Image (cartoon, rainbow, N blue to C red; front, side, top):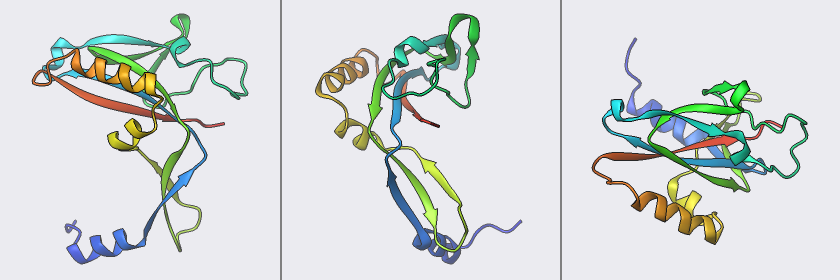
Length: 149
């Protein structure tokens, strides 16, 4: 298969639109050690994700795609050193393109957008969390969950 040409890349980028939606984004910051063997299977307990105002289901579990859910412990299993649940950002963003029907795809929010939209107490907690680890040994990743209700 041939590599996509620069001209084709420009055409695709020109046609894409970023659309802000009312779907909230739940953000969890992960501290992931650069030496993978230093990470542990950490349980992201669902009670840290709650209460979710307006969540319509009685199970009260925020569905997270791509991670293993342990029903008996009501938690998701994530490979990292530590995590911090930052809470909800009141919107999400998705890509759309004219002329391709109903196609769209949600895209992650950048770190600067996440920071701008955190409550003041969460901003302070987030900075404290990031300063807790040596940046030469740990990478910080933000996993973002889009509600499906």
